[in-house]
Amino acid sequence: MRTVILSAAALLVSSTIAFADPIVGNWTTGSGGKVAVSNCGSAFCVKVRSGEHAGKQIGRFNRDGDRYKGKITDPTNDRTYNGSAWFSGTNLKMRGAVLGGLLGRTDTWRKG
Image (cartoon, rainbow, N blue to C red; front, side):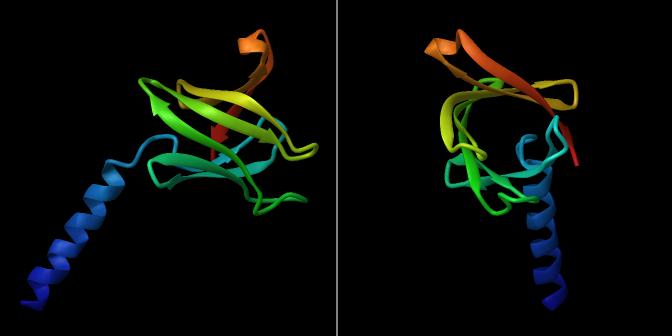
């Protein structure tokens, strides 16, 4: 019986990992900073993992088709922008913008 329970638990864990959203994980920003994207309720939260702002949540996104939309905060000045993210190959493009997207900056994040 114990073997059956352990096997079922292992199957459940492996299936959860297999179906994790690709945005979830550890990322390296264009400037070399380390961030983590994790599930937080029905959204995805972005938290700084290293440096002066380690532990600070800087974003919250919801999946919108093949993109993610939400808010992203510059941890150096605490300004919050409309954010969007999408994949370009294996890289994640993260954009913060104002004025309906007319002005903004896009950064490329690498997994790891």
